[in-house]
View 1 (tube, rainbow, N blue to C red):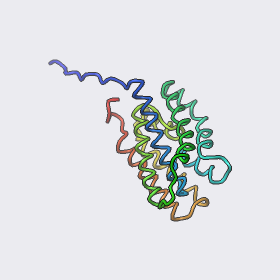
View 2: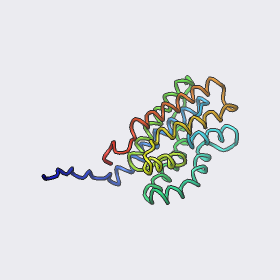
View 3: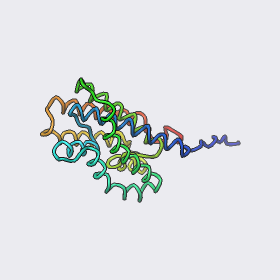
View 4: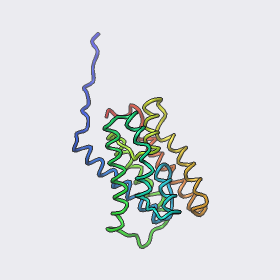
Length: 204
């Protein structure tokens, strides 16, 4: 019996990858700005960068860029040159855009709970755009994507566990209401990732 073969799905073009890096990092960085103005937190490497920016003179962008530096070795060794280059560019662009957004937009009245929840929704969509084009935002994302590829552990589930720990570590930095809102936001972000980024769900 003849075997029906599926046509090979073409990979993304260079232009598509570049546009995805631009759109994905714009979304993530805009969500970061919303959380920053609300005084909230999130999980993963971004959450650590938030903590550092709240207790030191370093800006979020600077802290985020520096924290990711040790993870590029793992990305290069385990996930290849292309993934590492895209991830380095994505991290640099988010660091840059978090500085640029406030030059063009400022929220004079922003409900902190709304900003925390909706900011994480925006960030989650941005993450999916980057993941679909073989890029990430470094740190825990690299570890989560590598484990998903190696052992099938969903990136969203691992990040959800780690993100909860990061947010809980911020107990002495933010108020209890904002801490609860931050945990809810981190759960929403990772739910978006868990639902939309599964092994074998997409062809590319």
